View 1: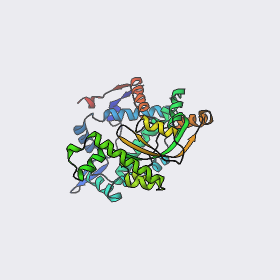
View 2: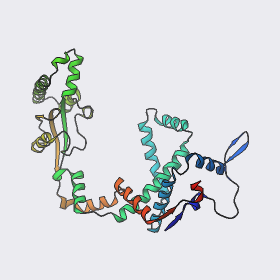
View 3: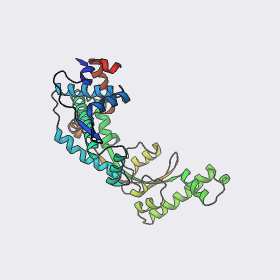
View 4: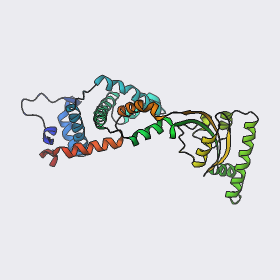
Length: 314
């Protein structure tokens, strides 16, 4: 396959329609062609590779039977826009203000999204057609979705951390010379023992986590560690979780950075054979991974003969 970039950069031969006007200055028109010349002078070939990749992907997907679903792409914009609004302290007005500062409008953002999403969907289509799901990939996905060994738990913890305790004691005026590792570990053990006693006396675990845990990422959720899969906070905690009874607090467990008191809220065991077909279908429908997108980029570029036109060499 040959792609002459001159054909992508130059207008087709034959009668030309009047150049579209994109702005005016004191009534005088600024044309799209003039703007294109300006962009080429400023940017040169900086984005040429991205443009070529976009064309390669769309052409390859079209040859393989992919059809652009404009309605689906348009529907994808709404959740994307809502995420931007949720992430901006100023809400929608904040997002629009930032766009305005960049000289862009909501319509511009929508056009940019359509362009990017169209490429993503084409890449997904091509990756899904050639994806090989071997036993290793199936096992990795099984353990991600259903827990290592097929045992998925919901785990909450109270975490007492050395560095947090050091900062706390220093704020209380304890001299730095007294904040030795031995002192910190002794104080952590004493505090952990007190918390275990409070749990034994009937205090609710989630309330205790919210008021005492040093883990800022989990304390607002009552200590629940999102998507815990035996791979965070060390092997000591993982072993204790496997041995724990559901609904019964356990610990203290000494970890590398401090002490954990845990609670397994639920435990579900799943056999791979029972979900194998469902997993295969799920993996087959997955969007392209970053690795797949890079491999697709390299493959299409290697298969195509891409030449820069004379305008790109100026």
